[in-house]
Image (cartoon, rainbow, N blue to C red):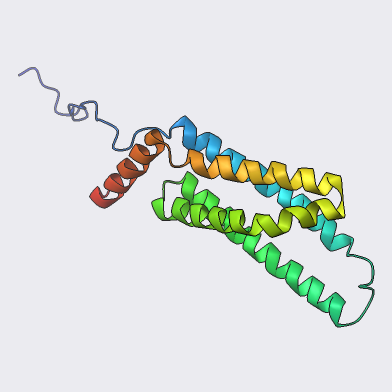
Length: 160
């Protein structure tokens, strides 16, 4: 008898096929663009929060301004969550990002002139943030990204 009964058991380990393919470049770049856009809009919102417009030294206008800014920060936090969930492969999150981007396109017809009315810097910043948002969201819907989101969902349903 050549077997050593005190040796550890031996099991055949076969290579396994990864249940989920690696995250495509379009999803990586798209979510990074959304992250950059969020960082820029957060910096802008913090600056606006610290420097309210003239004429809001006191009264109900000041309270309404700060309540509105606080609500805006809450929406930005939600947007961070949606961006993270899109990065993690949740299809519903990229759909939420698409819908919010489309609402933003409609709102931009009013917001863009307002931004340029404040200053040229604000207007150009708005255009840069808007472009990052549009391109970032659209990158989540290219063919490679669609296939990856389907594969992630299938793996999640299989329990993998």
